Image 1: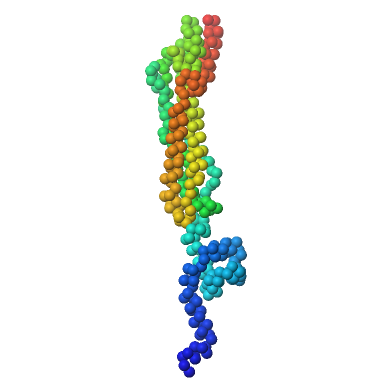
Image 2: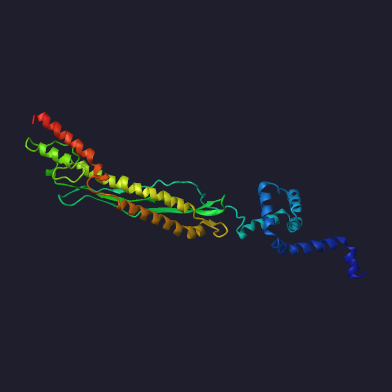
Amino acid sequence: MSVATKRSADPQAARATRAMRARAQDAPQAARVAKPGIVAIARALASGTGAGEAGLRRFAASQQHQTLLTLQRTRGNTAVQRLLHRAPEDGKDAGCPAGTAWNAGKRITPSFPLDKPPAKRSNSDPSTQHSDPPTMTGGAAADCKGKVWRYQLQTVESKGKIQIVYFTESRYPAPTPADDSGALSNVTRGNWKTIDDDLNRNKAGIPDFWSAYRAEDLHEDYHWKVEWQGEMKKELVKAEDEIARLSVGFGKAATASDAETELAPKAKKAFEDAMKRARTAYNALGDDPGDPPFQAQVPAVEALRKRVQEHATKKGW
């Protein structure tokens, strides 16, 4: 009997030969699978439509994905799953990678550490308030719904320093302690009206001579808490919105580290540009007599005036 006759007479051997050929062709066939077909099968598996061998066969046949069906018949569901797991390489059906989850709409509460050393005394040097350029921290976060990485701010800090400079003790009705609460030892029958007039005339300005300790603190606190922090917070919101719009697809950045390289410089620039705008707005605010920082000191001056008036009344002056 010839070899050819033997092969044709042995159906088991013929089937085995065809099976081996099918297995050998699995890889190139899989490579030719249309991307929309892979995406459809992947979605079906994720939703449960393709769960189980029979379900996958029915779905593949109905969608006419014959190459996937052939692969499933010859190698099983595991081979199909491995093929589908390679689909994200085309960047169109990526799953959600490991990493911090994107928290949409999250707002940062900035911190404002303040260095306020002991007060100095001088009849010529002014008090000063200074703020360092604000800093931020953050990192890449996975927006699984959008299939992109975004940059999530984590902390924002703005450090400042206030150096209070008081006049010498002779220029305060209550010389000690430095809060206007002490004995009115500098107030006399002969000068109390001068003190009262001076305080009243310059309560929202610069003293001619007599002053209130707390006026200095309230003035500088207004610069720091109301003006600087106010302008900084307004611009921070704009920076957060701009940073939230930055993104890079999972197909382009496979890991959080890759996304960080892409997004961090852009986020930093958006933040720093916003802080420069805040600085410009803050520097443009007025600091002349009658302006808001001087108005902020009025309650302290009025409280001291009241003490002086009541003291004079009690003394019968």
